[in-house]
Image (tube, rainbow, N blue to C red; front, side, top):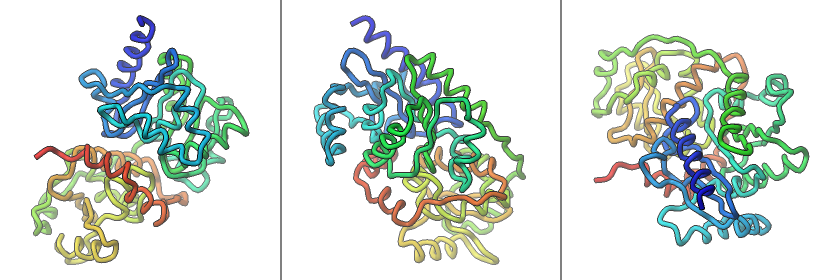
Length: 344
């Protein structure tokens, strides 16, 4: 049992470290796993990698049974049943971790990778940046089983240790945590993009329009979504990746002309049928709905960090309405959102 404990201890330490880096993982996003002696230890859905040292966030599943489930059309449901005896649900990406042959796998929402993966020319640009790494491009599919099927198709074409997921993130696999960390660091080095500097928020203007008593974001860097013209255009045009849609919705409220906040919120709600999580005041900053969860706040920071790495000179690919609906209406994501809400 000693080597099982050692492998899990290494995963816990590494997960906590990468989970604390907002350029790699935000809130409850991202997941890691280790395969040891027939058991797949995978992060539980909705838990935070950053808290891996303080909380039990890994769920053990029988690896052979998890892999056997992948051979069935209802593989996602079969995997869910494997986790029924656990206090926490296995990650929604458990099928992906089971499919990959590597002993250690990490799926992260790397800000740098996302900033490439949302571009219309992503695959061509990544071919040049990652050309001598063993990598593969995976077209966008809904997280969970559909994504795993897309990964299976990509791996049938070529084996890979690095997967770039269109409009989603990055997956690395290796023999142990040290090797996986080295590979992750190398991909990050190659894909690193400069972050634009931007103006500070204008608190007086934000107060003047705030007739709903909304709040300022927890991290002041989020204000760049209002003060930076390119970031504003990116944020107002829709959802770029799954956690954007799940935690923030498809659209922000955008104040125009002499709008008060209530005008923009009402307009956004009428157009989309859902109240927005945040509002953009061009040139001044961002306001967020009262009580916005820590997870959603982390996703707002992620959006700002991604947008500040995009210059607005390349066409972007947004998630379609059907993609967003599939995410927002998915029971597994509703469960994850519920875990992110503060207790009352």
